[in-house]
Amino acid sequence: MQTERRPSFTKALLIFSAFCILILMPPEAARNITEHPKLTILWVILYLGFFVLIIASGKKLYQRYDHFPHRVQGFFAKAKTILGGYLAIVAGEIVLGSLNRLIYHQVQTANNQAIIDSMNGNPIIIGLVCFSAVCLTPFAEELIFRGLFMNLFFDGRAFWLPIILSGLIFTLVHASSNIISYLIYFYMGCVLAYVYRSTGNLSNSIGVHLINNLVSIMLILPAVIK
Image (tube, rainbow, N blue to C red; front, side):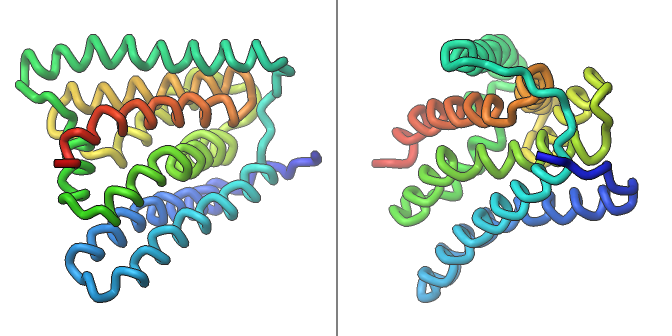
């Protein structure tokens, strides 16, 4: 597929900023389900609609500007890449999570706690969050923070700088209450960016993100289902 040249910095910034705002909309819609229960159907439609908009438009723009070299991988090589990325995230979360408990006495990161609180025992919100965490968020966030960010602002020769900055931007949209929590999401974002940049295949980082979210949801569900 023929890709276009990178847009001007101003245009790239406007595109990326718009998607950063859009990714904040689904949590707002979910919050309104609790605050305005009579309009639940409307907020559910908006919740899912924002994700559809992000994924559909994000994919189109990603395909337009994707210019990082792609490494051809067979099924087993791809599976190895995804599993390796996930295990790298787990290893980092074990170390940083232990430090978070030791220093700040936090069992959950502020972001995970916010997700638990947002569910509030509401079966509709629980269902939406679980579904989106596994089936929607990995696609939306990888398109934004890896596919779009790295291709809009960097050329095909850049390697470590887009990885580090992608991790940093990814951190800023996840709630954190201390430096260790920030490092957890920074590390995760860098691993996802490395998986994408080293293979040029966004489906690899989506796969890692999906598995990570699936396991996370399975671990926090007992705290919200009583």
